[in-house]
Every structure is written in structure tokens, then in C-alpha cells.
Amino acid sequence: MTPKSTPSTATDVPPGATAHTPAPSTNGAPPSTTTHPKGSPTAPPAKGSPSPRWPHLRADFTASLVVFLVALPLCVGVAVASGVPAELGLITGIVGGLLTGLLPGSSLQVSGPAAGLTVLVYEAVKEFGLGTLGALVLIAGLLQLAMGALRLGRWFRAISVAVVQGMLAGIGLVLIAGQLYALTDAKAPGSGLANLGGLPGLVTGTAGSGTALTAFAVGAGTIAVLVLWPRWKRAARILPAPLAAVALATLAVFALDLPIARVEVQGLLSAIQPPSGSDFAQLAGVGAIGTILAFALIASAESLFSAAAVDRLHDGPRTHYDKELMAQGAGNAVCGILGALPMTAVIVRSSANVSAGARTKASRVMHGAWLLIFAAAVPAALGIIPVAALAGVLVHAGCKLIPVRDFGPLWREHRGEAVVLAATAIAIVVTNMFEGVLIGLLLAIAKTAWETSHVHLEITGLDAPSTEPVQVRALGNATFLRLPKLLDQLEALPHDREVALDLSGLRHLDHACATALTTWSTHRATNSPTPDNPAHAP
Image 1 (cartoon, helix red, strand yellow):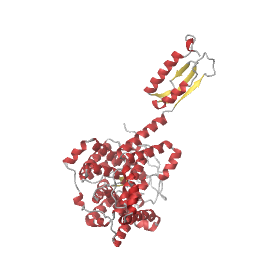
Image 2 (cartoon, rainbow, N blue to C red):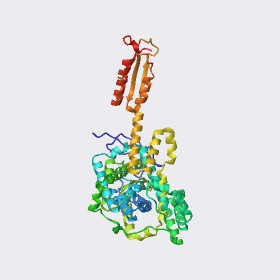
Image 3 (cartoon, helix red, strand yellow):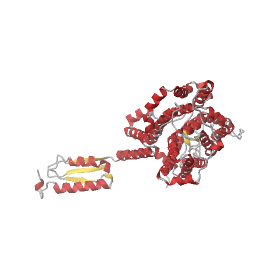
Image 4 (cartoon, rainbow, N blue to C red):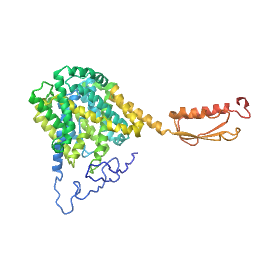
């Protein structure tokens, strides 16, 4: 049986927007009726007024150009950081626009390669090879399609927010540690711990190398532009910060002819490498299965969390979670066939789409068309982009994944959630993405079980005559997690008195508690002093 969704009220809306309460819906589907303020961009035309065939074409066209300019450096940067040709990032962005953008689900969120999967893709390519990446992504996409068909999309909202934040924080830490090497044109050692351990050597090596210092200056300048550019409101409205930062860095490197590494270009068609039969043969191992599950689950969770966030930014149709999951699965299946990177819905590009005034899915479809035209018409333009500039973009993106400002309030208000967040992030850095997320989920489940297993004892009769038993009534949920404290309380009762233990007030009693309490009660009845058993009296 599928539970019904409850109506919600959007409370996080941009300045000047009006929050609306959607009608009750099932499975996250768009409400059947929506009221719009008079004169709003989404309001239906008045009766008798002419209705143009494409009423939102101008707004969607403008928004698509903005999203294209934001997506271009990110697609290339994510691909380079993942250890694959830059064109594969563009292919994923093109599929995310032209295919996923056309499918139903969410109307305004944009899909493409994401920094959140960079670490996992890098590890997969390193372990299985570039050819097998397509097979991994294809099977993960088919798994997403199956989950959407089984109407499991809404259940991703049940994943602990602390685990998701911890996952993103762990990804951010590993991403930053790896991209600091690319920031100086150096090769990263490999894993998260190895990258962190090699940072002191990186610092000393950079200080003694003029080329490394030059690359670092370009990367640091890129980060500075990313931070400062949004403060220049007029310029930020014309040119997005990521494109401005990469363009300025590329111009500086070209004008000064700096001897630092550039992006290697192969061409769009030559970069497409569909998986072969031998690539699929590698999927039988435990490691490959774990990678597929990690691709499917993490990409699905990130996409659906992004959809929930984007829904709060506009007053248009709400996301249908199961359809959105199937759209993401279809996109990943096609990306797998083309041998490209996995895709997710990306909050940075999606929020840029909404902020630029997009009204329909046409904006994200057109952004995919612009990516295709750029990659086909001017692929050589990628070859002049310095790698250090893209590393700066990803270091900045990694920093934004770490919830530094939110951790303090979370620690003060929900300490258990903060512990789960930090533990998940650390586990990802120490182990890998899949194992780290599993550890975080297990910790979240244990924390929830601990918090819900409240049990206390009502003790009466301590002041009654010693011939009368002490009455003990257990209330709440008795689980093995509370058993040690429960037995300590019972053992603290006077040993010279008979105890009557009443378990009828418990809402839940698991097998471990039932066995332990029955054993304690039997032992206490045998050893308690009674008129027939005076030998145990003190």
C-alpha cells in the first residue's frame, strides 16, 4: 500500500515571491489546482485575451543561456577531476539537458555531472578502467528505472539528513584534498587519506618549484574571483561566477604564455566509447556491485533532495518523485551506453535556472542544446583552459559542500545528528564513499533506536512495611539498548524486600529484554526473603 503525501506549505521562497499552499497530492505529483497571484509570470491569461503559443519562450531562452554558462566549466571540471576526458563531462551535460530535461518529474531542476560523484567515479575508473565505467553507469541507470517503476522515489526522503550532509561533507573533503594537487599541476597520490597525508610534501614541493607556484597562483586567483564576483551585482547578472573565473584565468594564461598544464582535448565523437562485453564481465565482482549500488543510491538521493530544494524556490508544479527518479535512470542509462559520466540533478545549476527566470522545462532542454553546439563547433576552445583554473572551481565547490556554518547550531540543538554527520564524513575520508555512507546509515539507525527506546520504572511501596512487596511498573519501549540501565535500576532496589515487577505498561518489549527481565524476576523471587524462605533474610 502506498502512503498518501500530506500537503505542505512552501516557506523558503526568494524575495518578492509569494508562497502558495499546494493542494493535497499523491506521490509528489503536481497539485490538481494551483492559485496564482494576479499578474504573476505563471498566472493563466485572462479570458478573452490572446494566448501566445510560447508564452514563456523569452524567459526560458534567457535562463538556458545562463545555465549553459554555469554548466560549461563545471562539466569540464568534474570530468577532469574524475580522471576521464573532458568531453565525457560535456556528453553527460548534453544528455541531462536533451533527454532528462524532456522527461516528466521536476520541471525546473537541471541534471548533469556532479562534484558529489567525482570521488566515486575516480575510484571506479582507477579500479575497473575507463571502459567499464560505462557499464557501471548503465546498470546503475537501469536500477534507478526499476526503483522508479516500483514507486520507491518517495522513500529516499526517509534518508537521514545528517547522513546526506555528512556524505556531502566527506565528498567535499576528499575533493578538496585531491584538487589541491591539481591546483599546482601535481599528481595526487590516490585515496583520501593518502592525499591528506601528502599535503605537507605538496607544500614543500610547491614552494621550491616556479612552475608549481605559477599554477597555484592561477588556481588561487580563480577561487578569489569565484568568491568576489557575486558581490559585483551588475556583472554577476550578466556573467556567472564560474564562467567569469575560468575565462579570466584562461585569458591570463594565454596572454602571459604561462607554462602550466591545459585541458587535453580529443573531440566529442572520439571520446564516446560504449562498453564492450569484457567490460560487463567485470561487473560480477563484489566491488563492482558495490560501486553500482553507490552510483544508483547516491545519485538518486542527491537528485531527489535537490528536487525538494528546487520546489521551495518556485511556485510552479511540484516534483513527481517517482517520475523524476525514472528520468534520472533513463539519463544514466544513456550516459552508460555512451561511456560517459553518471549524472544527478545539480542544485547549483538548478537554482541558477530558477533565479534566471525559467518557467518551463524548455530552459534546461535548450541548455543541453547549447552544450552540444559548443562541443561540436568549438572543441578546441577547451584546449586552452588551464587545469589549475578548473581545480580552483572544484576546490570552491568542495568547500561549499562542507556545512561549516550549520555544524555549530546543529551541535547545540541536535548533538546526535551532528555526531552522525561528522562520523559519516570521516568514514568517507578514511574508507571510501560506499562504506562511509553505510557507516553513516547504521549510525543514524542506531541513534534513532536509542532515542525511541525510552523506558522508565515507576517504583512504589518503598515506605510500606517490609512484609509488603515493592511495586515496580515498567513504562515505554524496552529494547536491548536500554537493558543495562534497566537492570542497574532493578538491582539497586533493597535486597531485603520482595519485588513485584509489572510489564503490562510497556508498548514494546523485545526478546532480549523479555528474557533478561524474566530471568531477573525469577532469580529475585527465589532469593527474596519471605516467611517461607527466611534463610535469605539479612
